[in-house]
Image 1: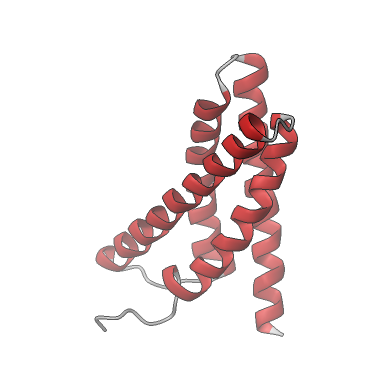
Image 2: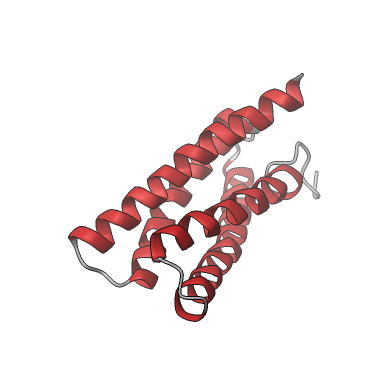
Length: 134
């Protein structure tokens, strides 16, 4: 039951993170007329901060409060989010530039892949209950 609740919470906050990411992207593209790669990057930065805070507290319920442990979680989380940014950008470039799909549809497709990868990494690497050096 707890595992199912964790997945539901991850999906809930994942959807919110995705909505934040897409809304930021649309705002940057449509209203500020920033090109799609920079818009994707800025939207990613904003959504990563939101995702770290919600994943740590509400999804994986990490109780690490010692500064070193929190820093380790944050850098691990950020590292894997940089990897997911690369995936996001790579998928966007392939879909928009090569396959010629509308950038908004490409953004949604990229986010689906990224959300799945991020759950796996967060669950088994970033917010695991015991640290390697404990």
